[in-house]
Image (cartoon, rainbow, N blue to C red; front, side, top):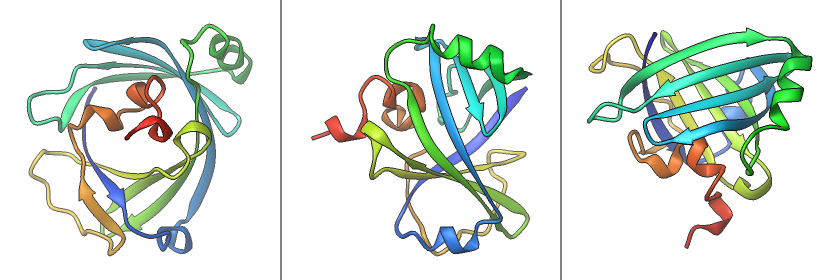
Length: 156
């Protein structure tokens, strides 16, 4: 239940032609406390509830627990979430042995594109696609829970 991932900005939309899957995601947060977040997500026709703990000092890993719930339950729970619903399209792109999840945000976060890769160890090597830009791992302003409160279009 430990999540290890690295997060990057994206420099072009070349990832779109490389994607093998595209999914619409709507998500909100029941709790955005710095020590833990509780997220409700609708991914396509599936619902999920996720609890995430605080990141370690490197920002690379943190506790994550996720459980699939019905779409109806997720739709009901979204209405209880804090203000600032996130909407995005997720593109999945194979790069070497890893899959990058590239999120193109909409609404108040329009213009922001972030790629994440999950790893088995913090120092695990991976093939970097050419569209991968600056690493923002551990920069909390890029966490979805923070984007729901201070969206990209409000940044200076």
